[in-house]
Length: 226
Image (tube, rainbow, N blue to C red; front, top):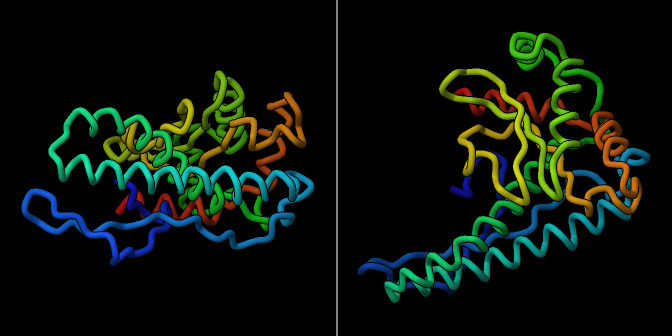
């Protein structure tokens, strides 16, 4: 389900309606979310050129491809073409995941970020990892260790009520593939850091902690617990 807390931007497309199984299915079109800060606002930790390309080119491509794929999927549903539906699912997973992940990522960052989390989030981190530094060390290690392209995640396990760290390959969305509710994601695709950090991924991961928006992560935890 792409419609989760602060996760995707959509707009109503009234012109596109498709009869599916005797009903009228109205189509939502996804849109690129605006950033709440300038492209250069996260410098020196993430430079403006990276942010501009990452947001306006890479994320925009996921959005465009997701809309195209969903349109094809609606057509396949209308025709009852199960083979076509199955063949489109990898593109839905990749582009839908790219849209979900990046929309979370932008809100996880802030020019006023960094420091340490407070309140209930800090208490949960201390409970589940021992200390904030232990969380940083464990999440950094898991994120740096991603083979190829992917994401490092801090997620919330609704069943246990605990925080968990994991990594996902490519653009696999955390909740859709693991069941964990995403709280904080670190993008380690090369497009997220290569122009500035070259092949030294650990330096990028170390730097990004300086712009983490802990207020946003705390809000996500509160929403996940409801």
